[in-house]
Length: 95
Image (cartoon, helix red, strand yellow):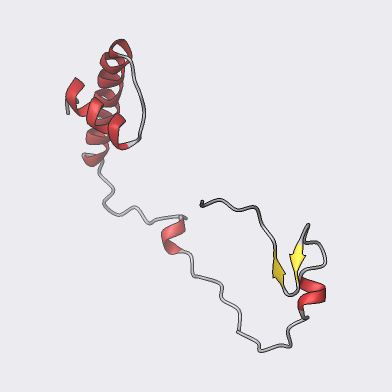
């Protein structure tokens, strides 16, 4: 699959990357090569091969929710650099 220079520009724009024209041509060739390789993988015969491992076959390990008593603000805010009563104090970001 051939990736054009225009498609590289679109991908760069979506990724918020500023890419020089000389690099766009190189990336076009590299991405085309990667996609050609992936196309070859479609043709691999996997008939009768059982999957050996992978994240798709793992089960989630969940714990029970246990209701407990909160340790309170003195414990939870003990390492806070600044606090105002029961709240963290953080620098203002939005003006």
